[in-house]
Length: 193
Image (cartoon, rainbow, N blue to C red; front, side, top):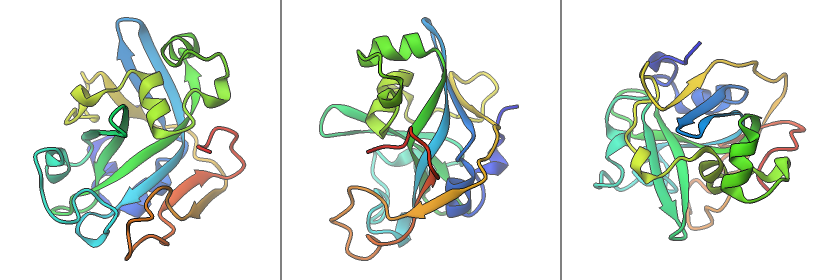
């Protein structure tokens, strides 16, 4: 069953934690690829100096200022895409970064896109998972709650133990750097390194 918009219209930290165990699907002409979310990070808009929306709206961050459950895809290091999902309460430009997946379907397609046969590294980071899933900047703004969407989420089995840790790669953030806003499935071999 697809995850509906109301799932994302809640406290962003709750959404980030409860996305662990849900399934992300992307459909392309090559076929569908699916992965179970094992790692996320929450970004709390105006309240979070690591968030892209901390200082307000830009052309790039537009999807975070509309309805929740939309993709926000941006480029890092000039070459890797990252998938975020708009979340939070109304008028809060928050999002959840999908950091890692456990591949579940379409591993041959993922392996071809990533040029590796090592399943444990196919989706073990935000750039890696976007490449493996075939998600690019053209997907920014996509409604992940649409019945006809190419990218969507389905309910899965939430793990028994989810750990909260500091987020990765945000040393520039002075105010919120140490917050425990990264969530991982405890003991997962598929999280980012």
